[in-house]
Amino acid sequence: MTRRHMAIAAHDWTGLPPRPQGRAGADRGGLRPSVGFARRAAPRDTAGMRELQVVNAAELALAYAAAEYAVALDGDALPLRVGRPADDLEAYWPAARYLFVSAWNPASQPHSDSANQAADERLVARIQAAGVQRHAAWAQDSAGQWREPGWLLADLDDGAADALAREFGQAGVLVWRRGEPVRLRMLIARPQDAVASEHTDWADG
Image 1 (cartoon, rainbow, N blue to C red):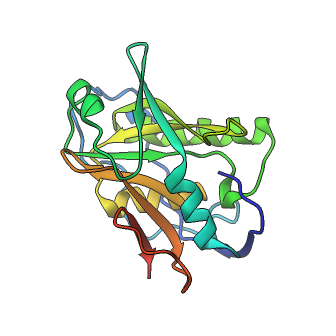
Image 2: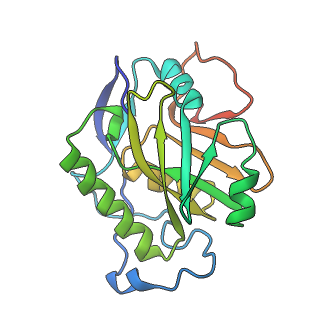
C-alpha cells in the first residue's frame, strides 16, 4: 500500500530461498501449515527485500487498520475488517490461521502496474511452490482512491507470514486465528507516538 511521507533505508533482508519448481503443482486440497516459508539462511539477493523505515509509521498503521479488505470466494466478495471476526469467510473456507498479504507497492512506495503485476506473479509462484492454499483478495480505502490486489492464505504461522511479507517489501499484513477478530500486524518499528490499538501488533517493538 502507498502512503505519503515515507522513506526506506536500503538494507537487504535475508531472503527466503527459492522453492523447487516441481512443487508448483502440489495438491492444494488440504491445508499445509507453514510449508515452504520456514526461515533459514540464504544467499543475499540484492533485488530482494529492504528494511523499511517509515517516516510516519503511526499514520500508516491507522490507515491500514481503517482500510476495507475483501476476499473472493466462489463469486462472492466476503469483507474483512481489522478488529472484527470473519465468520462468513471462516465458515466458507475453514482454516486454523489466515494471512492477507500483497506484493503491490513494496516499501509503501507507488510502483507501475507492470512492476506490481510482476511482483504479484513472483508471490503467486512462491505460494504455489509451497503448496499453500490461496484465494484472491484486495485492500481499498473507504473513499475508493486506491485499491490493491493481494492474496488470502491459510495456515501460515507468524514467523512464516512475516518472512513472506518482508520478502515482498510489505509494511503490514492481516493475520488472525479462526474464531478471533482480524488483526493488523505491522512489520516496521513501532514509533513512540503510535496510538494503542487492541487489534494492531508491531513485529518490531
